[in-house]
Length: 273
Image (cartoon, rainbow, N blue to C red; front, side):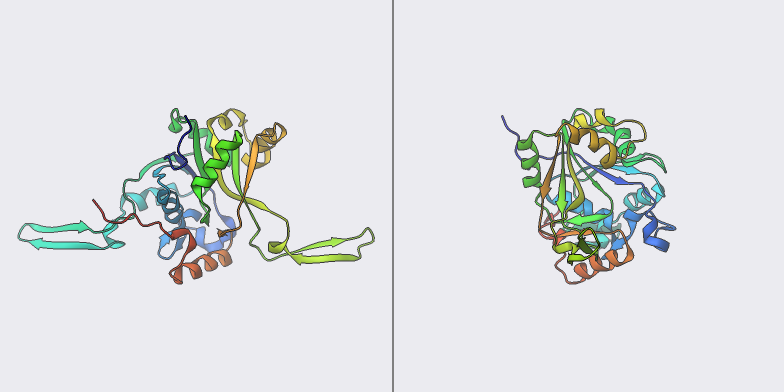
C-alpha cells in the first residue's frame, strides 16, 4: 500500500555553520537566527514544514548553539498570537486563540563547530529512529514549493535523494563566446537555463550509508549517488529565497513587509486547543 504524500515525516535542519558572508550579523548569533519580520529565519523554515504537517524537527547545531536553544526554551506564543487574558485574585490566565508552534517536537543536537553538512547528517542518524525517509534543508533559505508534490515525485522516482532545483537569484550574466573570445550572447542568469540546488531535500535513510568521513554532502556523497543514478531533481519555478548575503535578507524582509510573504501563505494553524 502506498503512503499518503501528506504523511508526517521528520525534518532535519542544518543550522550549525558560521554564516561568514552575513558579516557583522553573525558575530553574536548563528545565521539561522537572523530575523525576518521579527522572528528568526529558522522559525520561518520550520513554519513552512509545519504547514505541511511535518512538525517533528531535528536541529543540527554547531556555532552559537546556545542561542538557538535559548530562543525555543524561552519562546512565548502569547507575544505573537491572539489571546484572551483573564485576571482574578489569584493571578492571570492566558487562553491562546491562535498558535504558531502548536505541537512541534524539536530535538536539539550539537553536531560540532566545523562539521560538514554530511557529517552533521550522519551524526543525527540515530534520531531518525527507524524512519525510512525524511526531509532536510539548510537553515538559510525559504520557498513555497509544494511538499506533497515533492514527496510524491521522490517516491515515484524510487531514488535515494531528491533536491529542489531552482533558478539562481543572484545578479549575474551568463556569457557565451566563440574560441577567440568574441561575444555570442549574454543573458541574465535568472532567465537562463542554468539551475541550482535549492537546498530542500527528500532522502531515504540509505543515504546515511553513503556518507564517508569528511564528506561534503553535495560534492562527495551526492557524487557517489549520481554515478548510480540515485539522485533526482525537482524543478520548481515558484518562490525561492536564499539568505546568503545582507542583500538577500533585505529582499526577504521586503516580501514580509508586504503581508504576502510566499512562504507563509496558508501556514497558520488556526484556533488553539
